Length: 73
Image (cartoon, rainbow, N blue to C red):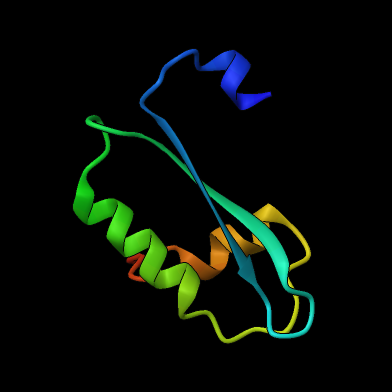
């Protein structure tokens, strides 16, 4: 479905598994030559170094890999 929306040969979809028990399939999607190589490496690093048994939703995955350096006033 994503390939239909983004009709580009530069769309890259890399699949990986997350969760020591669930082994949930996760796709890392980006457009080559637009996305920063540093950003791609950081996302892959964070996903591959998660120490979690189950991933229930994409929202949960988002929370696990986002920066936690929010400043509260």
